[in-house]
Length: 215
Image (tube, rainbow, N blue to C red):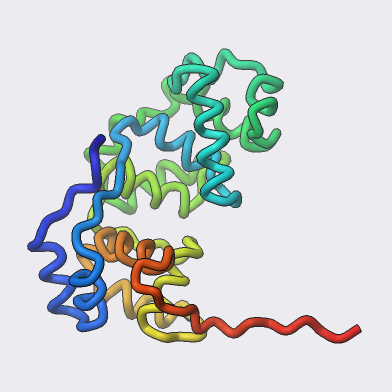
């Protein structure tokens, strides 16, 4: 199993930039987060995981890998009924088969992403239906091992920021502040924020709980 590659030089830098992040790194330790160097399969998995829970995404992904190999040819050759039958929505079926066909028709060269800047990668990927900024960012971290990605569109990242820094809300201005603080190792900070959001430090979320209006 391959994991996201970082070392003490990256965490030492983050710790020097922020005492609270230093505390989190010290208590949590090194995080072995699995990555997938196969860009196509990671892109398909990211699209499947859009707007559903992690457990649901894992279940659907396991069904897909049991059904077929995750290659452009195999995905393009499946019927829409096959894909919907394992829990992939009609719209996502169109997205993943569209991307598979674009690769087979040489409209998309995923291997070329390795030589591009982060901004160039996002520009290329978001041009395809079903790929937004969040999906592109997840691919950059979990397939390309890019070091400087922090996603404002990731609810767990935002929750981790609230929990660690005790904010009731993460405004765009606050997010930009932390993004500057963690640069150029935002991806490493992301690993710790995900862990914090998942309960690694036992912190509560300061986000106000909305009370139901009385009827």
